[in-house]
Image (cartoon, rainbow, N blue to C red; front, side):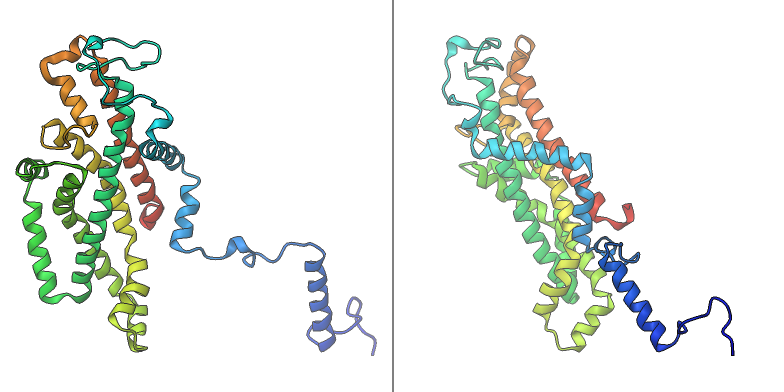
Length: 326
């Protein structure tokens, strides 16, 4: 029989055709052609964290906030890099003097260099914010996560305790708590913030754990013999920690503002610790800022920029980790 035109050679479905097709495909790939769609590295599914980092690197809000925070951290650790004077070295002869060469922000009511005090004030504010956030996140996540995982009476007790703490105004609580302490250092303020700040994180961690517990892979892990510790560390914690990170990042800026508020009211950090809140309080007492506005403008601007940077960072992290906002 004569083969139809165009059908010469082995059939595609035959052994020879399959081998030739495989050889041709292999030669094409070796020759530099792109692999089929869906098989390249970019087509692979990314995890939540890699996907979030992919979005954060392309978010200008995150980049600006990250650079500001990096600068604040650097001057908090090494303030002498940009301020060579002593923040406690003052001279009443320069009281309320305006800016001069080498004293870019002028002098305050005590004759202290405002620029130097603004730089050194970042150390206490950032230290309070970071340490308080870590303490609140660890304590709140631990209590809330355990209550959500085990449930029962512990869950009920935690719910009632958090309700009690939510009923305490945090500024009023700071006035009462810190006024009873003899020495108000950075660690005293951090302890107060952790004491009243953990219930918010605990409630979020509890809700996140309750949501994760409903997934089928936890039932499979339990059926394979996984204990409570393994389930908490290997399965629940990595999948329930994202809302806690978002909440803690946003709260960090609020804790810095809270420290400044307490220092402004006179129950926060005490001298010789340099604080933006204390400098703002000193500038507003006696209305001295009317004649010398620089003693109020610069520490207030530094505080506002710092709080704004951390809130912007928290918003960017929230947008990257929340799948509902994609």
